[in-house]
Amino acid sequence: MPEALTKSEVQKGQDPSSVKQWDNDVPLEKKFEDFAAIVDKLGVCMLGTARDGVGPVCRSMAVAKRTGPDFLFLSNADSHKFEELEGKSSIVSLSFQNNSNTDWVSVTGEAVTTSNDDPRIKEIHSNMVSAWFGNLGDGVHTGGPEDPRMKLIEIKATFISYWRTGALGGAGLAMEAVAAAATGTVATPGSLRQLTSEEIAEARSKYSSMSS
Image (cartoon, rainbow, N blue to C red):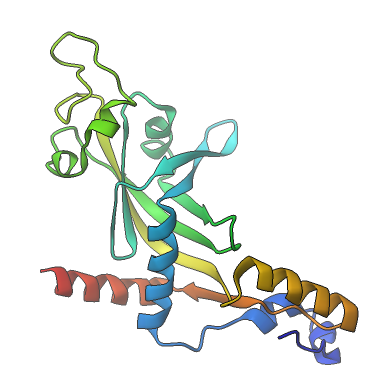
């Protein structure tokens, strides 16, 4: 429901939307569960890296596997992103957006690239992956898991923030906004949360113990 704007919020220079939508007083298990539900449903994100002389560069990437708060991507070793990740900065961002209900997730993390002989390549490879690489017909560049162009990018999350739309979804957001605009209140159609590095480490540890 829309909430009234207070004088103290304005005097303190606060963003009333963020303050009123803030919902961090929930158990870590619940925060992580909702985060995982959003990213698993979407499966595709924008991977942001830093390119020398340019600045932030983003491209769409399909998540090959999520393990707890961390992500694994399979990509072509000849792409620019490897130059960027193996250059000055391995800090990256992942952005997920659900256009149907406005859910979003932002992940900041540390990227590690692996060699072509990483056994996880065979675990996540599929015929659909081969379609993005092609088969040169030389018995080497086949698009298969042994293709030397196949490399992994592993993102270890260090900070996560996300927005979870309320039960009424996108329609509820529109109704909330209309009601807030008409009454001078502030729309609060969902929950804004974050996972700190300490919480992420705890979640990672719990996931590792459950899967071992």
